[in-house]
Amino acid sequence: MGGRAVGFPVRTLILDPVPAELRDLLDRRRRSGADRHDEVWQGVRHIVPAPGAAHSLIAQQLAILLDLGRQELADRIDWPPAD
Image 1 (spheres, one colour):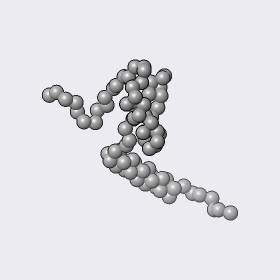
Image 2: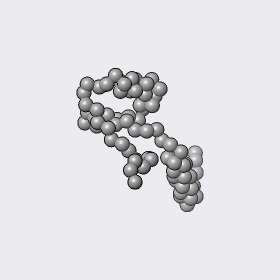
Image 3: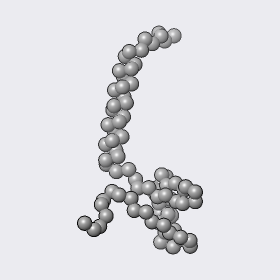
Image 4: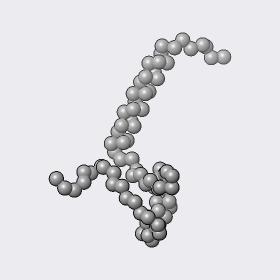
């Protein structure tokens, strides 16, 4: 088949010294706030992509399901009267 499937992570290891292009990328990410989900694990930087449309849809569906469950549970609880 060849090529890589869209959506699969590509691992890249860049050894020291850090190339100027990577420093520029990291600086742009920092200035724009795109680095807020980046992490460093045992000295290895993990740059994660921003959530996409599929992620947003799943998050919305999960929030709706959790809210429905909360409403149903709240209806079953005999809450004491508020003072």
